[in-house]
Image (cartoon, rainbow, N blue to C red; front, side):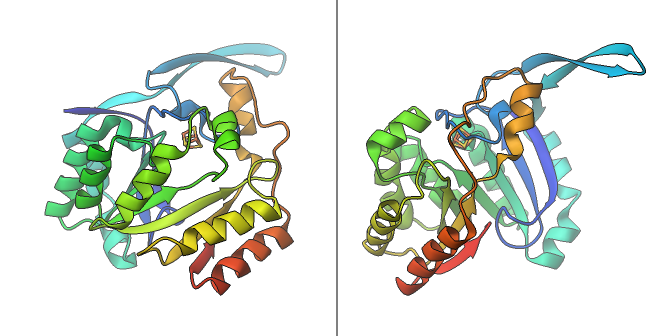
Length: 264
Ligand code: SF4
């Protein structure tokens, strides 16, 4: 079996506990306006040309985003970092894109890691069928579950999809075997008004089995990628959330009884 991935990031420290190796799968059903991994949205391998000029000489280079890799080859890559994972209490994180778009490969990898006693985290948008989501919660040790907006109109406008399935699946995930950490990408111009914070805190308080929330403040680091990959940049109108608003949300969540991290 093979997986289509676009990156393997070693020594990641924001994708779950300890030092982790994060595998980025190609393909995402959402299309978030602020996405900082736009090269992960298409499930296909993409080809780009980039032109650089050095000393008046123009050089054109072909860039290929994505590659197919067998699961055996991928496990060999992951095993290379075992010592760092073991020493730090880390593991492997499957991210994307949306890794559950390639659920068969991801499930086989999760199973394989479990047999080798490698801790696994699955970073998901939560947009998948109920059957797939349930199985993911059986095979992963930790689910990093992204929640973008409770306002369905705004969610649809800026991600392309309704949040209904994502909210239903969140309740299913919280009843599953894996620990769930909720991740909130906080984006000014999208979900950072006081009313958004109030709705979010009230909703999270109503959920069972949730104890940790990570706030991921938006950053415009992906801007260069839109240029590089000739993609339309739709990040206009979004901004870095002011520090005081991030702290206000953090304190509101702590008062509601959650453990809160900024940046994951
Ligand atoms: S869910 Fe994540 S990877 Fe998919 S489009 Fe949104 S930000 Fe990008």
